[in-house]
Amino acid sequence: MTGELNRIRQFEVLKPPLKREGNQLKKKVKFHFDGRWLIAILFLFTVIASLYFYLKTELPRWWEEFFSPSVVIYQSPK
Image 1: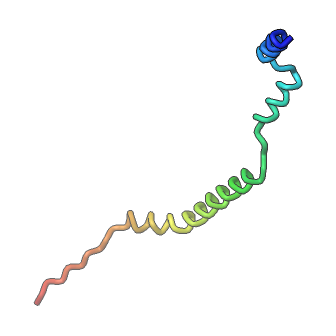
Image 2 (image 1 turned 135 degrees about the vertical axis):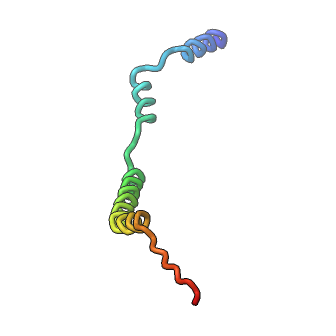
C-alpha cells in the first residue's frame, strides 16, 4: 500500500497544473497599479514643469551674456 501511494504521489508532482491553478499563478505575477506609481509620476511631472519655467526665465539672460561682446576700456597711465 505504501509503495503504491508513493507512486501515485510521484505522478501527481509531474502533472501539469490545472487551468484554475494556472490562472492563480498568472494573477500573482500581474502588474498592480498602486499609489506609489502615481506619486512617482506626479513628482517627475512637477520637476519637469519647474525646470521648464526656470529655464524659460533664465535662458534668455544666459544667452545674452554668452553672445554679447565684452567691452574692455584701457586707460594708459599719465
